[in-house]
Structures are given as structure tokens and as C-alpha cells.
Amino acid sequence: MSAPSHFSRQAILTRLTNLAKNILVSSDQRLRRQLALIALLLIALIGALDFLFSFEFSLSVFYCLPVVLGTAAAGWRFGSTIAVICVAIGIAGDLAAGAHYSHWIVPCWNATIALSTYLIIVWLFSSVRSLQREMEQRIQQRTVALTEVISERERLEKVILEIGERERSSIGRDLHDDLGQHLTGTALAGQVLGEKLQARQATETSDAWRIVRLVEEGIEKTRRLARGLLLAEVERNGLRAALQEYAVTAAEQFHVKCQFQGDDETDCTAGSEATHLYRITQESVRNAVQHGKATHVKISLTSCDDCLILSVDDDGTGLPPPPQRGQGLGLRIMAHRAGIIHARFKVEAQLGGGTLVECRLPHASIHFDA
Image (cartoon, rainbow, N blue to C red):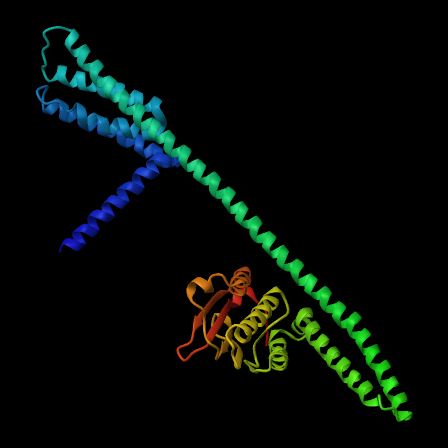
């Protein structure tokens, strides 16, 4: 029985606190007119009670309530007016009730003391009201300033990521167009040299063909690096095709079993969302292989009722201890990318070992290809 009673008291105190706060800082003219009317009605009610109880019972303390309400309704001027009215009604009620004084100074003294008390209350309440409003204004100003700082920080972070993507694309194009073409030309020159040596039946022929094979391997490695930097597959065919291609590339690059599983009928089209999801996948697979020592990685892209789900599951050693985990730059970058596209990001250890990286992107943030 005590719990509901305690809850009721807490609820009443909370409501009274909120009401007092609204009275102090509210600028609603309708509320202020209502408070002024209530103050006047209270004066009339207390004055009537003061007359009924006769001058032997003082009700001066009850006049404090309309004084406070009047100050809250229209400021210290109206509160002071209410105070004067309360004193006048109190003295008039005592005289009407048949009060007799030994000297005229006595009612004047009583009125002065009562008025001074009410004016002190007006001053204190008005000061509290002013401080509360000033505090609210400062909070609003600082909130606006903080919001602007956060917005500017988010904008700069997006700009930095966009610059990073442009630099990645620039390096990828240089690798593909410049270094790739140069290595291709070198391989052709090596083939011509090998054919000449073979025609002369020179003993260096095998060495020449070996150099050609090494150059061709360099060409293939350069193409893989360029594909990882350019994101051409994402821009051209969508995220699903890009992830499927990356699974093949990752298996060849890291010498692990990497497979992709995704819905055929749903895909995320090209855009910043697809780019960030692709980069999250790259970082997840790289962490699984390099830090988790995984031998099997599964990339999944599925869709549910309200979001697109990207997950990377591996059979590695799992997550590091929390102190070391918080220092990982890769996890922070992935979480930051997810935050930019308003996706829910989580990393958790699997029961049987390994790590699950999951990113849920709401449908409202993306476009779909049927």
C-alpha cells in the first residue's frame, strides 16, 4: 500500500513543480490573465472570510497567495497593487467587523507592517522569476549554440569523408590508368623479349618468362587495389553486386573462405548510403582476417519490414577486451559511418566464437531497386 501512496506523492510533487515552473517562465497571455483573475477572486474570498471571522482572527498570511499570483501574472507592479488592495481590504474588514483601536496609529502601523511584508514577498518572487527567465534564456542560447556546433561538426565530418573518398578514387584511378598501363606495357615488352630469347634458344628465356609472370601478378594486384578504392561496382551495379564481387576479391586477397548471401529482389542503389555500407564491410572483413585470424567470413545483405540489414560474421578469435576494444580505430570509423547514414550499428561476440558486425539502415534513408 505504501508504494502507490509514494508514487502518488511523487506524481503530485512533479506536477506542482512543473506548474510552478510554467508560472515562472511562461509567456502565455491567457495563463497570465487567468492567474490575475484567480488572484482577485482569492482577495474577495479571503476578505469575506476575514469579515466573518471578525477582527479577533488575523488572516493576513493568507493574503500572501494572491500577492504571489498577482506578481506571477503581471510582474512586480501588479503584485504591489494586489498587496495594497489586500492591506486595504484587511483593514476595512476589521473596521467593518467592529474593531476598536486605542489610537489611529495602531491600524496604520499594522497596515505598514503587512504592506512591507507583502512588498518583500513581491520583491523576492519577482527576483526569482527574473532569475528563472534569465536562466531559461541562457539555456536556450547555449542549446542553440551547441546545436550549431554539433551541426557544423557533422558537416565537417561529412566533408572530410567525402574528401577521403575523392582521394581514394583519385589513387584508384592512378593505379588503374597509370600504374596499370605502365605494368601492362612492361609485361608486353617482357613478352617480346622472351620471344626473342626463345627464338635464339637463349638460356635466359625462362628468366624472361618468369619476369613476365611476376609483372602480370603485379598487374592483377594493382587491379584489385584499384577496385577496392574506386567503388565502381557500387556506382554501376548497386551494393549487392559490389559486395558479391568484394567477397570474391577478399577470398583471393586474404586467402580465406569468404562468401556473400543476399536477397535477389532487394538492393540498395548507388549513393552515400551504399558507399558507407561497402566501406563498413571492407573494414569488418579486414579486421576479421588481420586481428581475429578468421578463416571463414560470411557477408549478408537482407531486408526486413523497416530496414536493410548488413552483417559480417566470422569464425575468428572474437572481440578483444573492452579496454583494448575502445582503442580500435576501425570500430570507431565503422560506427561513425553508420551514424552519418542514421543506421544502427553493433559489434558483438558470437557464442561459438567469432564476431558479428551488424548495421541496420532504415528504409526511409535509402532507395531500392526492385
